Image (cartoon, rainbow, N blue to C red):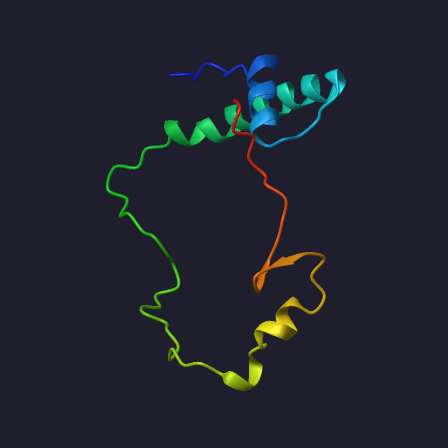
Length: 105
């Protein structure tokens, strides 16, 4: 069974670009549509593999529960004043940044 090559449209690319806040030219959108389609077609070949009897795995190193002790290293900590020393803007002891969400949409 041969998988149908997925086609990524320009409108699909435009939606992704809008979500990622990427300004793209028309040429870049065309290039990405072709590139995305090719990539998805290549990755979709995995669906054709016979995985019957293959054991699922989430990691391959054989290591389990590799943890470190959770302790505070005060000699590596900044004071609040040190952390804010080079900040462009602060407000009541915190970093102040411009809003990044457009609530009108």
